[in-house]
Picture 1 (cartoon, rainbow, N blue to C red):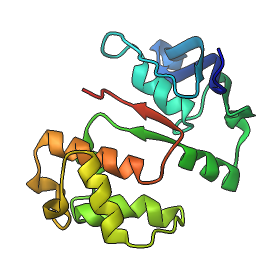
Picture 2 (picture 1 turned 180 degrees about the vertical axis):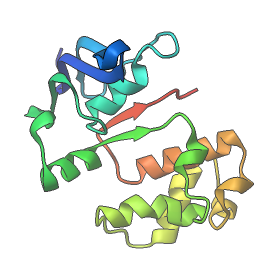
Picture 3 (picture 1 turned 180 degrees about the horizontal axis):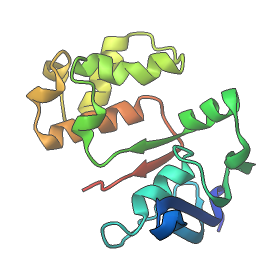
Picture 4 (picture 1 turned 30 degrees about the vertical axis):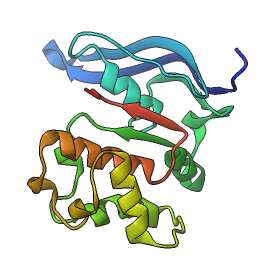
Length: 181
C-alpha cells in the first residue's frame, strides 16, 4: 500500500473483572487478541452483534481505557506507553465521536461554546471564532442561526452534526465513530 501506516493494533486485549462464586475473580474478555492496520486516508468498519466489544475496542485504541495486553501504534509511536503531554498530544490527533451525541454535548453550553471548547483546550488559534464555527456548522448542514442555541433545541440528527463539527474543529488525523448511523 502506498499510503503511510497510521494505526497498527497488535494482539490487543481488554478484560474486565467480574466476581465469580466463592469470591473467585473471573474475567469478561471484551476484546481478545485483535490485530489490524489502518493506513492514512483509509476507512475501516467494524461490524458485530451488540455487546461484542466494538466500542471497547475503539475506547482502548484511543487510551480512554487501558488495555489488558497488546500494543497500539499511532504514526509509529506505541501509545500504550504515552504519559502526560505526549498522551495529550496524541488525543488531539485521534478523537472519538460517541454513539449518543446528546450525552456528549453540555446542555448548559451554546453550540458556539461546544464547538470552541476543544479549540480553546488545545490552544488552537483562530482569527475569527464566530466565522470559524459558522463554517464548521455549514460543513455539516447547519447554519449561523444555530450558533447560540442549546443542545435540547435540536433533533437527534442535528445533535450528531454538532458533535461532528466539534470533532472536526481540531482537525484530528484519526477518528473513531461509535455507531455513526
